[in-house]
Image 1 (tube, rainbow, N blue to C red):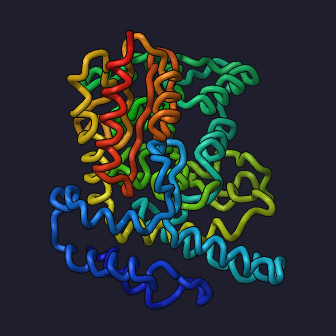
Image 2 (image 1 turned 90 degrees about the vertical axis):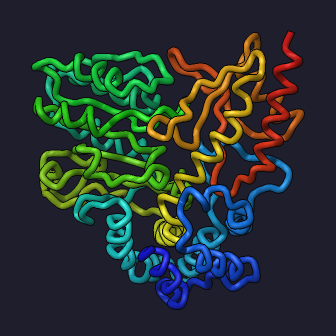
Length: 431
């Protein structure tokens, strides 16, 4: 509630004094602000099913009216206020690049860091702004002081970029990779914890955990696994690409040492924005991926020596945070989970269709995976696009294989009714 009030107040004072928030000056924007004010005391559960409210949210985006985008798990569209901010900041930079980039917009990095820290529930001195999850976690993977024979526990279902980085690190330094292969979906928390913990040995130095699997939306009990790792002196890395601004949590609650996310996913920030968390006492001994003047200082900013980058997209992150706060973290998750269950429950009993994701909020959020018996997932995704103009993606790794379907806050129930009809017809046509 406090964050939403703060958002409304911030609309009255434009960021850095230069960004016109044109959407909120439009009729649709004013209607949305009025609805937020009118419904501020409504519970998250009740608001999740209020289609009139979420239709107003949809008006804050510029998504296609014809192509139904249900692959928001890859990268999410930005609300119009974020798009407007990027454009205006970029225009400002081009008036005098070396002046406005470093003497105007660059001065906004510390306030932005503080804003991100408020959202993440940690100290600003533990957050570095970068470009995506891969960059954040590869900073950690290649920066840890591991030696030959040290063991790292990870999963064959982890994201490919992370797996490849660990394989390269093992090839260079002789560290030992202990691969798990877990059967998903799972709603057995104790079994998931035990599969990781039972693999720990006295040589295990690091465990790599994916908070939500990008393949099928499985939520892993990260905090519990990390706590067991801590007891054994094992460092914990969390891939949070799909959980930040999706699930409701703070980084410290995960009991991790290192954490990375992509802000262009569920936060709806500009494309190519990410965030790295390093626990304060771990900063000094972690080498930066890009050289810093003093690689062993305990300043989180040593991980931000990226050279020239887009100051426009970096500063527009702040507008994405404001938009997220306007909705509210709990309200957003309740809506996303409601949307996933709305369509997933309807397709469960269709012959030949398998649902490969949990419907329980502790084990699944917005992302879900389906498979149609007798049909390759690539074919199903192709049919959804070609015949029904529904954009999804096929998802394949180790023992997970299907079509990934991911709505977002701008997705309506009418959109999902269209999806259900399409799945029904495609399944019926399979011989």
